[in-house]
Amino acid sequence: MDDGPSVRVLPDRPPVVIPPVPTGAPPASLVVPLLIGAAVTVAIGAYARMHEPTGIAVSVAGFSSPMTVKVWLGSGAALFAVVQLLSAMAMWGRLGGFSPSWAGAAHRWSGRVAFLLTVPVAVHCLYALGFADYDARTLLHSLFGCLFFGVFTMKMLALPKQGLAGWVLPVAGGLLFTVLMGIWVTSSLWYFTTFGVGT
Amino acid sequence: MKRMTPLLTLLTGTGMAAVLFAMSAKAAPRSAEPQAATASVAPEAAAPSTAPPGDAPAEPSAPGDAPAEQRGQPGASATPAAPAPTRAAPVAGADSNWTGRLDGGATIAITVTDGKAKAYVCDGKSLEVWLDGTAADGRMKLTGKQGAVLTGTFANGTASGEMVVGQRRWKFTAKQTKKADPVLYRATAQQRRAGVDGGWIMLPDGSQIGVVTRDGTPVPAPPLDPAFGTTILDGRTLDAQPVTADPDAGE
Image (tube, rainbow over all chains, first blue to last red; front, side, top):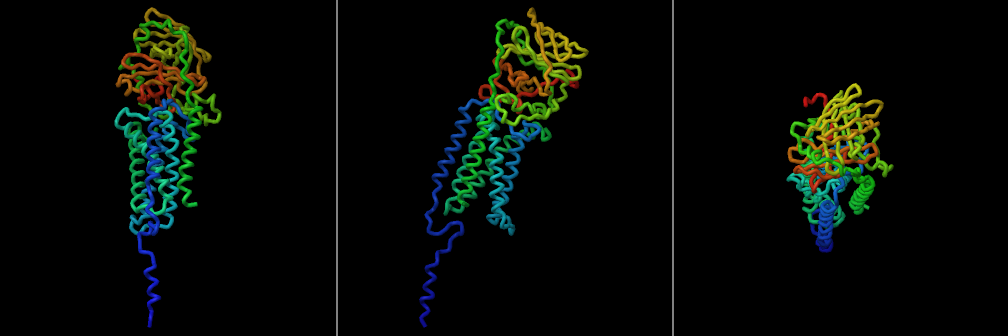
């Protein structure tokens, strides 16, 4: 009984690989996203440094106390960043058995919201204040701020790529989270501890 | 489609930033127009600008409340599209605010709370004088450093009188502002401890004028963002707070 043919099908099966990496595809290159991300970081930093700060930018409507607009928008972004961290951990199975099907959607939408919350804050910082190195806090804040949008751009450009190494997105996401938290600590948390929350 | 969404996110953010930048550019300050003609400023009048340690307005009171709604004002005339907040902010209890001119060309602002008054006179270039005192029953009397004395009367939304510094004498007239927005800002106590003082007058037409003194040298103040109480001087952020004549502050 020659059952060889039926067996011979098996070797044709693709080798078992880690799911996120499709077989055959050449390893996706991060060069372009990295370059563009770096360019964004440098461009923001350069603009912030060269542009003469006006001290005044457009207001953000809907807040009774515009002085705290940035503080609260930034804190909102930080909150959504925590959602980002948790949903990402769920997606990657790092929350034990808790890995709901909607974790991916939650991750995407909380990310979009967090990003859009940061934009008005960044615009005000860039337009009205600029890159500051008055002290360690403002310097760190300025550096983190430039870095954040560079890393974000890099991650957005890397996301659609097929066949990324498994560590790329977690590292990029972790970096984003860390940088955003750095921004928040050097601005909003500083503000709360200096001026109080109730203002 | 799925591959597109991160790019859409980026584009959305970029577009949003672009719109905000455009609106900011429109809302950007008209330069604080230094009012002309102050060649007559007495040298001794320019001196009182050194930070007086005991002269602090002493208001740790919420810096976030008072400048509220002032935002957008500097550009309000240029940008009808910019959200111009209209709700009247409860300005730290100021009963009335006055802005006007001295006959020498300098600008004056007076803020009154419960009979206590604070005034600031500056020419936008090199002269600034802070004064403290009282304003009640139609009369005001304030004093400042270097023997500066301001006396005047007020009624029906108009105040007038004179300020004397040394041998110099200026007449002034001022009108009560219709809005409750603060008219006076001063560098925070923290800034003054660091050797930088500054005052800003927000005029009803949305323009502003001010003088900043650092290391004892007065210079024209960079425009202050009243919403955030910040401006930039020599690349450094400078913080200011609305000034109120706090009746509780035992000056």
